[in-house]
Image (cartoon, rainbow, N blue to C red; front, side, top):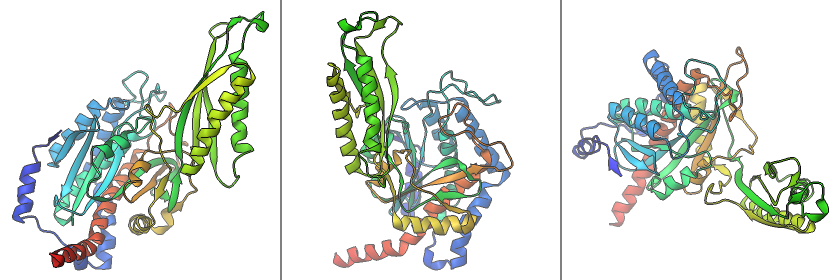
Length: 445
């Protein structure tokens, strides 16, 4: 791991005390409320907005899958170098961690995911994916762009930061456990809070949506191999049919939610894969099925995990087959539910309300879709929300993970400004408490 060439000059400047700062106590309530508005105006400047559009399109044309984000990472580092922002690389294989501010505590993190999906893009436009079978179909190209946009704003206002903003460019959100590897690499060391968001085709542009507490479910995947005895389809009596056993298992799995779960405890068990046989007149020796389970508590997960294994092995045994179930934790680590911190929710309401108006703050129900940002929130207080990009005057946008997914680039300035505002004002809010804590430590000494 290396630091960029800017780390030591900036560190020396801070040691010499040549970078002026101000504290929240020197600002009026109106001046604090103006920070988000000023940052949004900055992000909407044509030279900044157009730059972000260009960055996003470059990333979109060259999608890279989990832990393969080599060119994306290089683009990020090139832009950080141009801005004079120090960073660490590599982190968690292809990740980048940048630093803006004093280089001293308190530290607050803002995060974007980098990876694309194994999809063939079906949208015909000038900047369509140039890589067959790969596409940014979940908006991570926009997420990286907006974090770079926030970096540009924060770097211009770095003299006023009351601490350090940590920029987390995370690889492998799409099932690769990228957040877990980032945590293992120590990116949250001394960090007191983290913010992240996802663009949404359902939330209007200029609006955001979130809630305190549970906002996204946790997820786990499973794969089962059901083994029988293959043979000619004309003589099933001489076979042990794994297709019949797998079919019964799939039907029985649906009863776990409809007949065993508390109706008020949201759960999902979905089978998404069924592979068995290769011709019309042969019963295969084995069948492989797989799917996902979603829930809002670890206790529910443990129960579902146990019951899925029991149902599949039990139904296989009824049909004289054997079965093995694997939850593939080495390939896709368990993503726990995402839980928003209550104090950070109040901070989000204040900042987003000042920037967008309280009428543009939407409240959503918890979603069954999972997000490995949850791993960060298990370590430190975190906050996650959705950034609107829906334009009522245009055609409806396709949903995430669709080959027809598109991004409304008018949303980019909002995301950049929100990232920058949430971090800047949180550091300002922390300063009196931090100074008090420092004073207590010095008194004890």
